[in-house]
Amino acid sequence: MVLFGGALIGALKVSLIPLGGGAGDATLDSWTDLLRDPAFRDGLFLTLRIAAVSTVLAAVAGLGLAMALRRHGTTSRAVASLPIPIPHLLVAVIAVVWLGPGGLADRTLGVLPFDVIRDGGGLGVIGVYVYKEAPFIALLVLGSMGTALAEREEAAAVLGVDRLHSTAWVLWPAVRRPLVIGSVIVAAFAIGAFEVPLAIGPNYPPALSAYAFEATSGDVIAGEGRAAAALLIAGLLATVLALVAVRAARGVDDA
Amino acid sequence: MRERTARIAGSVALAALFVLPLAVLALQAVADSWSAPGVLPDNLGTRGFDVALRSGRAGEALANSIVIALATTVVALVIAWPAARAIGMRFQPPPTVFVVALALPLLMPSYLAGFGLTEWFIRLGIDGTLVGVVLSHVTFALPYAVLILISGFGRELNSLEEMAAASGVGPLERLRWVTLPSLRPTLAIAALLAFLVSWSQYGTSLAIGGGLPTLPVAMLPFVRTDPQVAAAMAILFLAPCVVALAVVARSARSPL
Image 1 (tube, rainbow over the protein chains, first blue to last red):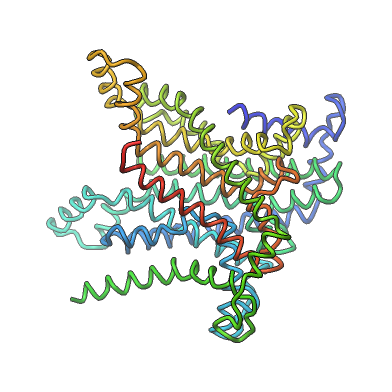
Image 2 (spheres, chains in turn red, yellow):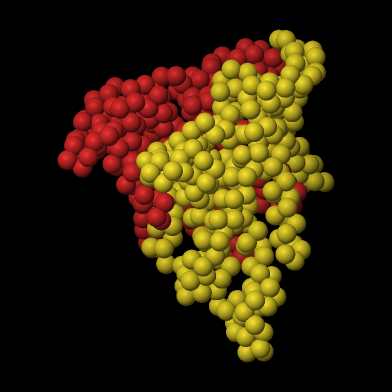
């Protein structure tokens, strides 16, 4: 907490006090510059779009994978869990090898009809997050699909509940909580993630963390302040999102 | 019979989805020449690893990453242990407020933590050093370590320790024969996660590390420019993850 608090205070200080200045030099210039910068606005929309799309797709794919793996043994589950310990940057390399210009997809299927790597919509970045995070969500959901759930489903079947209603009344309440928690973690990561957008994301607009990195590489003095402000906004967005999602999940549970 | 066929088809699909991409990565790493539209490389060789080691400073980066990840794991576990014990022995499950407070750093962009810590670390004289990078990684590894270790401490372990104490077993022997064996699987998973979190850190390493190369930092420029070198570095990047996973899987079963 000391390190984390120190990091937050340090970033806030950099966003308010120009390099080499004292407490009396505090100004909101970095924040106003940031909010006026069209690259920041475009980057913010791109980041939110990437986070939203990759979270929804990872949640749907993760749930589907968990359902498919439910009756499979340890080996299948271990194979499906392979992407979890693999770093995101490594999955980005896999994406380049398969989906980049002249990659294996081009060679085996002919030229792809659209760009995936470094495209303006961040398709490659979304693909990396879904590939990496769907097994993570599946693992969380599988944790809630134990024998107790199977027994409840059997009891529902004996009582004549059809499959659709059994899914809605028995399965869904059991998997909802891990699904929400997993999705929050994925969304928060996608908002603040850095290396994947930098490696295979679009040159313009940059994702928020990439925007911050580029700001510091250009104008060191003004750029540092804008970078800190952009990163604080990314962190704030992730936190607000997490709080809303946890609250919503609890509200549904209590209902 | 139909169910068995479906199961086999499912297993093949899983292998194609999750194993094949990694296998192709190994092929790309040794593909010195791979002209389109060939599905297999024309020439195999070691150019990828040569360039990675020479221009990419992959050897130095690999050594730094291993030292940093191991040190981060040790520091995170040493700090996490008393915190998790204090929380876990009193509250099971832990109150939401603790969980939220502990999880907060996980919601922050890693570059933000590195960025915010830079000035403090410059003042302390540890910016651009291994110690600085380790401490910045601990910011992210510690929450995982505490949250996981909390689940290992609880009433059951408390009762076992009390029984051992009542039987006259000293504190060190209690730790050796009761606490560590009981916590073994939890400790192994916490260690693995701390290691992996540090191993794949990019933002904090870039902000704090300065010219100190770690594997992700050294690898990223090649992802954009030279897929063969990126794939060679990816193999180096992957190997310790697999080793860590194997060690942890083993230590979760056998006594420490």
